[in-house]
Length: 98
Image 1 (cartoon, rainbow, N blue to C red):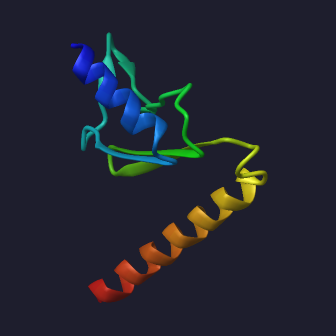
Image 2 (image 1 turned 180 degrees about the vertical axis):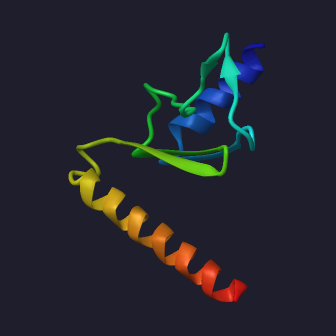
């Protein structure tokens, strides 16, 4: 247990970026007859400059970004860059399907 904890701590403290890609349900679901609108996953208090999670759910993808503002002072610009890149990929995919 101590070795595992030590290894995990060493990895987390010596990385600056965490990327997670989680495949969620492909169809809409409900919990206690309440429809689930979206699924979000996040990990806080990690010593990373940037943490990025992408979760797919019912044919949609949700990108979540957490940054250290002292290292990445303009996260809105970074998010805009990701949005633009994803939009370009979507257009490229549609063009290749024709």
